[in-house]
Length: 110
Image (tube, rainbow, N blue to C red):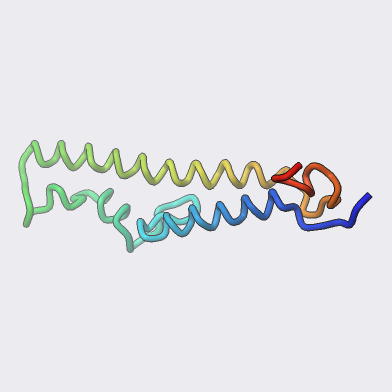
């Protein structure tokens, strides 16, 4: 039996989560919600969305394009949130400390 060490797989998942959060930040997506009032996701999913704003383009086609764009931007934001959720779910069942000689302790070289 070896020494108890911080779970390397859990640490790697924490680093992965931090990387995903860093990529989400410029979009204005944070946690399980869209942060208001800053960021492209909030701006693009607003009622005007920028595509059909009065100083850009107004028509039924502009409204349709705006709705399509909002759906795509919303899907992207949801994909990031799903990744965060999957990482959190995986980490929640893991021990913080593991035996250094166990498969978990030798990960990824087990």
